[in-house]
Image 1 (tube, rainbow, N blue to C red):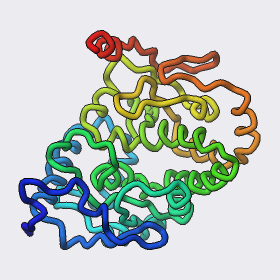
Image 2 (image 1 turned 90 degrees about the vertical axis):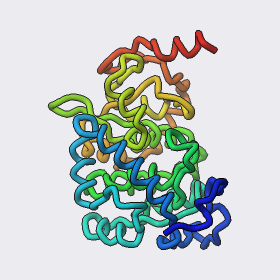
Image 3 (image 1 turned 30 degrees about the vertical axis):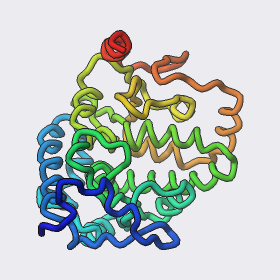
Image 4 (image 1 turned 90 degrees about the horizontal axis):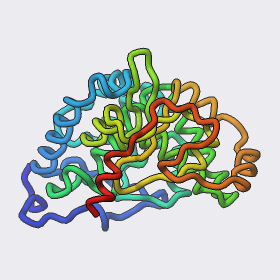
Length: 295
């Protein structure tokens, strides 16, 4: 399936100018992917799947198998959605890139996950700032086959609408970042990964679980919503949930009183420990100190 997109200078995101519907979705046009794009997915998949046993949570690995994601090219969103809908009622809808907050929350509240349709260019294979199809589908979508996690993400979308109305989106964004993107879960066999930003990154897969640098702190909803995060490096603190049910229960409540309390409290730096923290592991920050010294 070679095409002229796979020449020496392909665009970073060939969907950037695709016609958008009112809900910002586009046509994936799966048949238009070239051989180089499918090969890129396959190599990303093979590299990451080799690292995840013993590091990713069992719920993720089970869901990955149930959805039949594999090293067989960029997934067809229509086929993937049929499998997902049969399990939890969710679907995957293609978008060209990041969507406005209100659109994002509406999709989640209606059990639709907006996933970037483009795949990262070769020169950004190890890290890309804008979420692409590998991050979104490999990282986020499998856990939507888990009924409890799927209900949590729907509740998050519903809560996003209220956060926008109150002007307190920053606090809710921190909850998403520290759980959906970079969350860890405690299991009888040790800490495991469930955050998509980790699951789709080989370097952070190793760092988040095995490195002594970061703090690992037991999940507390208000504590998480006060904590700033890092967008261009490893996290200085990871939050650890006990179970997806715990996460769901924390989000199935009226956030109004929580937002009122948060207005009166200072935010916390990414590395900062706070009174009352249940510390799973205290970081020594050797990675971050070395980077600072080298700057």
